[in-house]
Length: 79
Image (cartoon, rainbow, N blue to C red; front, side, top):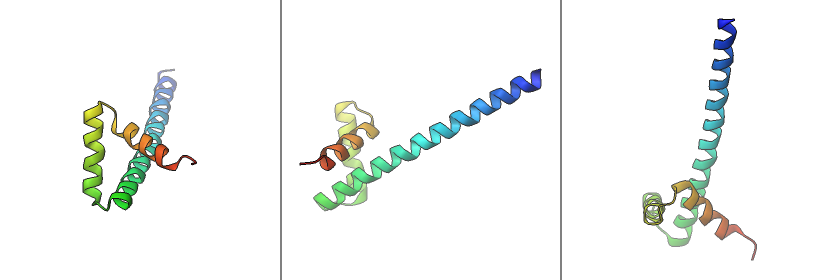
């Protein structure tokens, strides 16, 4: 019985880790997309683009991923 409980706990932990990793990869992709937009539009370096996203995040007390997501959504919505 104890082995079965441990097995279920291990499975749940592994599943949660997989979900967290998938979310982290989606978040990273959005941040990289936002950086790319800033680099292309404003002709700045990747570091400067990231710093700008971080600065906006801090100034607005908004998570970096949400700042990036908003930028991407605003720049890709239909005209």
